[in-house]
Amino acid sequence: KQLKANGLRDGELKIADSAITDIIRYYTRESGVRNLEREIAKIARKVVKEIALKGPQPVPKKGKPVKPKTLTVTDKNLDKYLGVQRFDFGRAESENEIGLVTGLAWTEVGGDLLQIESTLVPGKGALILTGQLGDVMKESASAALSVVRARAAALGIEVDFLQKHDVHLHVPDGATPKDGPSAGIAMVTALVSTLTRVAVRADIAMTGEITLRGKVTAIGGLKEKLLAALRGGIRTVVIPEENRKDLAEIPANVTEGMKIVPVRWIDEVLDLALERPLQPAAGPAPDRSGKPAGRRRRPARDQADVTH
Image (cartoon, rainbow, N blue to C red; front, side, top):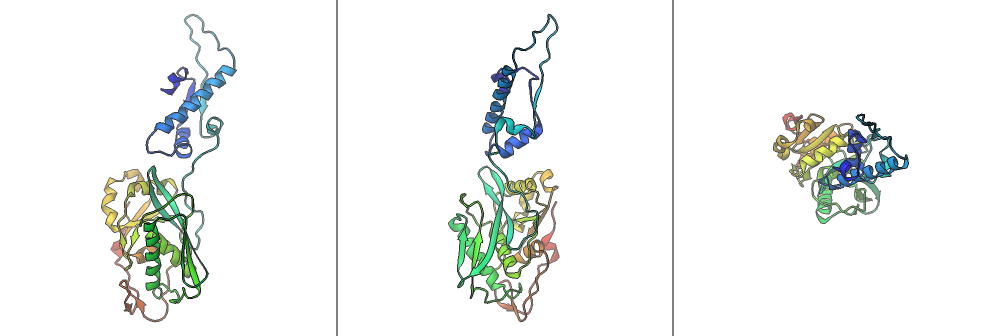
């Protein structure tokens, strides 16, 4: 369509699949294809200009049409026609880090990776939240901190860690508003990693709401989130057990490209996400309801089945 609209003959312009992929990823951010068509039109116009600057084309002899010279656009020379890349997409971290967790977000134009950072600073127990978080996400952060405090002994964390410290949770890309409860388990994991000094695996991403009892509950936008994880190089994704039924709607090429682990409790998330198991502190530890118990209860092994 754009070749004809810009006066190009068949064979004068070829846009490689790799270039189309990069146009979609780095030059458009939409749920449709309108801007993709505009970018292709821009390429076509610049190719027409190149052809015109080369001077008159060979005149075809009678009965012997001149085959036009093909100009090929690939991912290597795409910036020549469209300029510097305007957008980017989240990628998995290259190294395991303490206090850094990869969450998954749903947006109007698809899914994306969401980095969640945690650190301790000197203070008197305040919870500091930055990154332009909405009210629901702020409440989720408060719930995450309460889960960690209630389970501190079972996780090997000093129960009075808030007496001399403030907790700071930050979600980068501060110019973008963020909201929703699905980062709850990622926030808990980031806090536990910071407080225990155990790094989080870089190849794992997670999404799930957290309750005060430590239960992982359902989220929305699973398909978009899994697509974002696959695109970003994530190898394992933790999702709520309640979302297992939604996997039937996910294309096979997505589910086969990574491990998808449905979980019910935050204990399962921490076992998967942290570099090494946590050692409970001495003395009775609270159970999932927050009441004292002799030892930390672990979920049944079949509650963390890997679904491909």
